[in-house]
Length: 293
Image (cartoon, rainbow, N blue to C red; front, side):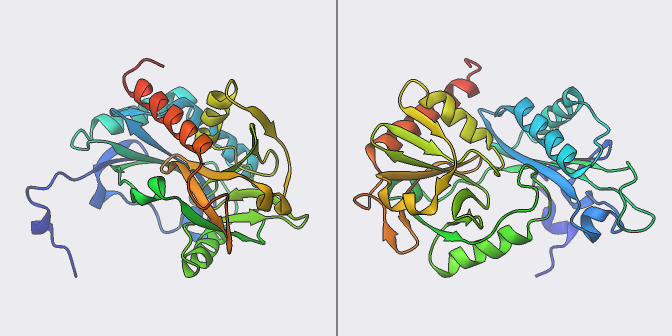
């Protein structure tokens, strides 16, 4: 079905920021010669709003810049400049109840089609937030493990081939996420998530060769006076002993896991400690949206 301009009449279109200009979403374009298109060379970050306030925006922008440093990409804007642009883009989308915010910095146009030349483009795309199925949080989800390692794991790059492939494998097994396992059989992270395990009063999460999630950092802060926190390498075999497992991400928040591959976690229901952390996170984000933290 082709959507005609007439179909948009009366509909509030989303406003994006593209390289110095605020434009309607259907006018947001970049060059096909940009190496983000030709080579998948660029970085991005993603966050959501609470009460229309971008959640930990500066932390996300700093991670975007860190991702760029990891892959040798020069970002020509400061942290404060990017934050101001993102906040203005959110304001220009006041028709949203809550928003998803995607920050992208492209590799730019390259004379040889592969070498960065310092002319990348900042894009800020603000779209309505879509809530995930309620049963994910009430009943819990299944995840799978896959023998994949990301290239330069500290960078959130636009090259998502491994993630797209791994998520396809998950869907074939009625799972919502794939967790990467490295060549040394260590548990790393999901395609878009970080993973946590609970064993007794100990909260365990992977500590190396991952992209440290912002939601992950919040959970670690909130858990500090609730649990014994253990950030370290995790062998895949430890999954079978976990009493509770959950995954975290900006758009997913805290999701209880009740099955890994073909094995149930605990009694096959979201556990009480996971639920406690879900509530702590919910209370924190509510307070954040009210400007109280």
